[in-house]
Amino acid sequence: MKASPVLVLFLFFFLTNGLANAEESCNLRFAPLPMESREAIVKQFKPMFIYIQEKTGCKIEFEYSDDYVEILNKMKSNSVDLAYLGPLPYVILKKEYDDVSPVVLFKESSGEPSYTCCVIDNANSKTDLSTLKNSKVALTQPLSTCGYLSTNGIMRDNGNSLSNNLYKYLDRHDDVALAVARGEYSVGGLKTAIAKKYTHLGVNIIAETDKLPGFALVVNSRTVSQEVISKIHNALISLQPKGKDSELLASWGANIKFGTSPASDKDYDQVRKLLGNESIPSTGNF
Image: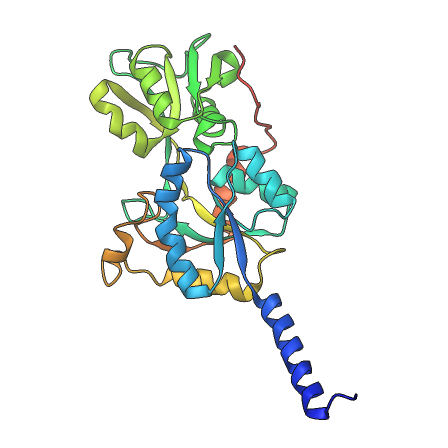
């Protein structure tokens, strides 16, 4: 029994529409920085992703990693579509994988899409960085912008270097601040905004970097279409934290609730200058 021409036509449109819908389905995998517990990460980013999902029709899933290196490897292997990255991890990733770009920069509480790193000591120490030698230095993670990169840059500006001292990675910025406050380390390198939260414990900021680009939402353009990238960009760049979107942003994490700024690869030239041809040691020297 032959199928009628009408039935054949109906089946054709049904199947082709079904395939088109399957191709148009949008599932994005997001890699957050492992700076907090998974519960804290979800609390920080989920409200933003609900907003992006509504604006783009894409479903966003968390892809957790234990460290920066794992995130970069996942991006290069196309198993991650979006990531929340600081300047140094982005610069290193861009060198090895060109199909990555920043969508937006997240503003700090100051309203600026930039921040600084600093070196701290205990307020009673009166440290002279130019003469610091064989002293214990607390750092964050190897690929943290405020870790080895910025701390050694500050040391160089003072005619010194980390190689003349004993440095160790403690991972978290707050752990660096507390270790210095307790007197376990002579100095430490971390984000200035976090260091200021610990001045009441005797932490003293003794040197600071120039402004660096803020943390960014970074996209893998090999796995995400330009149309979707544009939708995400437009959704985030249009936010008005002091206007119509103040109530919406109240539930977003402290690192992403102050609005966004347009981002481009050129924003990272200062970080590239700071890095130069230097390689970042993956472990401390004591």
